[in-house]
Amino acid sequence: MTQIKAAITGICGYVPDYILTNAELETLVDTSDEWITSRTGISERRILIGEGKGTSHMGAEAVKGLLRKTNTKPEEIDLLICSTTTPDFVFPASANIISDMVGAKNAFSYDMQAACSGFLYGMSAGAQFIETGRYKKVVIVGADKMSSIVDYQDRSTCIIFGDGAGAALLEPNTDGYGLIDFVLKSDGSGVNHLVQKAGGSRRPPSLETVTNREHYIYQEGAAVFKFAVTNMAEAAARIMERNDLKSDMVQWLCPHQANKRIINATAERMGISEDKVMINIHKYGNTTNATLPLALWDYESQLKMGDNIGFAAFGGGFTWGSAYLRWAYNGAGVAD
Ligand code: UT7
Image 1 (cartoon, protein in one colour):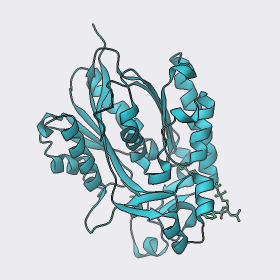
Image 2 (image 1 turned 90 degrees about the horizontal axis):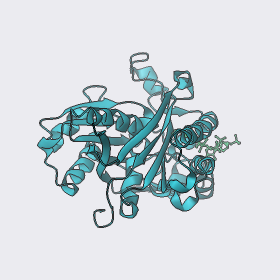
Image 3 (image 1 turned 120 degrees about the vertical axis):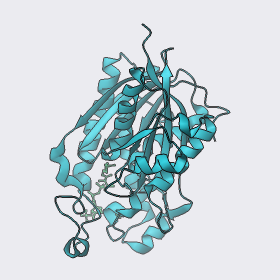
């Protein structure tokens, strides 16, 4: 029997219009454009503004664009997974809300929480539903409104994060294109290094938690940096080894955009030169679950059928992983 793989057959992104520059951050906290660009590679990020607009707003915009580009009717979607760390509500799932917003009436949907590795987790999970032959059209959304949990008084985190969303369509492929392999890891002992301390069941919201600013991201940057560099590079190396992928066989590295220095270390470990690395951290910052689909969206016009793409990500949890995907179509002429 021919093996079914889950191929990405379309990609679309959405970023809000408002641009938060390093110059504006200089007016909010004690920082400088020079420090931010040299330590992270970030020049600006997008921020979602507007009363009542949550992560689902951006996710739905990305999915609408995806459906338009791929000539897909919303009713054709079988499953929609939304990878997010900033859902509209604790419940119900943002995936349910997005499905309703785009008219995906026949889809079942759920959220995936794996912090910055969420899109990799979501894509790997979605691929399983395709590979069984049971489902034909699976949409993976990576979306985050990080500005809703960023403390704009904390210079070590507010400079990093931005808002955005991306969506990918997965469909069955029997010609060898699609997701070939993935390595996913998690280690919950990292909880205290990168966490939103309050708002969940362990520490429900109260006047005290709000006063203590515990609903914002808490990050021990240097510790997370060390784990991220080691584990992202390690996972990327592992996927290459076990698929016999030499660096000259990899056309693109699509890395999580957390810090340009972490991306460089991962590329170096894989033996991949800078011109093959998808980079958009300078304009969007770290959009958490949206970094990977936004990078694919930005580079879509350059992607060719048969390109070998390596993915690598690391995030809170800790979670991390890598994936190897063979691109299924020529992006030139399709990209927007
Ligand atoms: O995507 C999820 C996973 N997250 C990550 O992968 C993030 C990983 N971590 C990082 O990217 C980096 O650790 C940061 C960008 C967050 C921070 O860079 P760093 O080089 O690790 O800086 P640091 O935290 O070790 O701080 C070095 C110095 C400190 O000053 P002192 O104590 O040496 O006087 C900080 O107070 O830099 C200071 N600092 C800043 N200075 C100017 C921290 N943030 C800023 C800032 N502007 N925005």
